[in-house]
Image 1 (cartoon, rainbow, N blue to C red):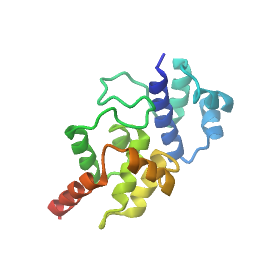
Image 2: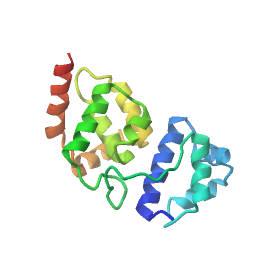
Image 3: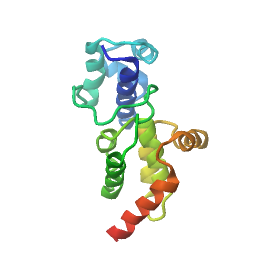
Image 4: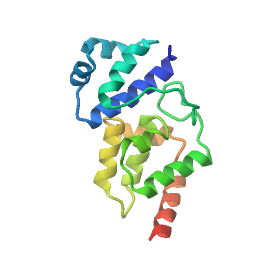
Length: 175
């Protein structure tokens, strides 16, 4: 059974995929063949049956898999446990690619962290602001609200003062 933080991360990732399809929790649960109450209870539980997670993943076209963890996450599941140059490079790469595919972004870390990063990217001149704000909302609904983004700014290990110049340098190099 997954730990609480692992379960939280999995549910947030699956929820982001459901939101990207425009599904409410009720619709997602219906398509998974589960009562909506099951989905609601999972968000506060310590563990979950693997069959339930598979049922939630299947209608999303998602698969549960065991893989070597790229980076650990914080106990609350919102942040990478540590930010290193490799992760920074991957974040810069995904922005440089112009991708707004959830799969490309979700492979890099927790949805809340990535949503804040996408919101920050939306503030850069020369980027498609609406694309990155929409991506942020698909990653973590509500992430573009000022109070939520303010929390991200206060707690992130990727301060804009460091990341924005790196992103702008990549933009200039690509031009």
